Amino acid sequence: MKILVCIKQVPSTSEVEVDEKTGVLKREGVDSKINPYDLYALETAVRIKERKAAEVTVMTMGPPQAEEIIKEAYMMGADKGIILTDRKFAGADVLATAHTLSEGIAKSGMPDLIICGKQTTDGDTAQVGPEIAEFLDIPHAAYVNKILKVEKDSVTVEMEMEHSIETAEIKLPCLITVDKGVGQPRLPSFTLKLKTQYREIPIYTMKDFKSQDE
Image 1 (cartoon, rainbow, N blue to C red):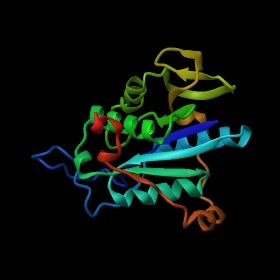
Image 2 (image 1 turned 90 degrees about the horizontal axis):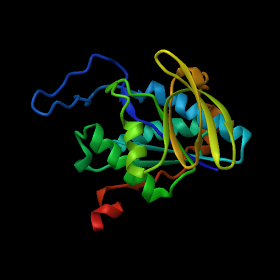
Image 3 (image 1 turned 60 degrees about the vertical axis):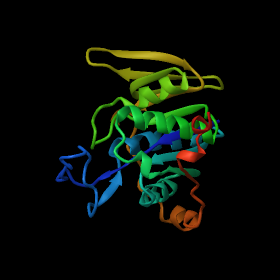
């Protein structure tokens, strides 16, 4: 089973200025970290890996220094990492971000299961995950709080909606966005840090995407 987790590097503080001309956060000189909700997505993937014969890949869209969060993901159990980086991606809105990530996923090879955090702390739209699924034309479920069953051709999840708890069986390949109820993220492993410190991190740019050749 192949699992892909979308992760994002976000500011470690809420005290971040916005460029008045572009509307983009000024990230220079600001400490960054993995988006907190993405840690739950990664934990979900690694737990499935521990029960099934699964390979976990993490993908992020951002500047080259985003390799820091890929390395942290390796320390938490991810097997592979990919960075999508290009000056043309700068300032991308929700739609452009989802489209770019979907292109990166298609380039890397369609996984069985894509897992995203519910939302990012620097955007809070909760739209990127579902939009990726739409671009890839696969089923998806949002606000997943529990993974009930993972089978060869489907995943059964529990979703915590505003006024109800819903259960759904979704055919693979599919995408889910997870909330904090799925399980507390583990701490990075020093042993894995030593084991993965020289692991290669492929980089994709705009020219690597199939749609650019059409």
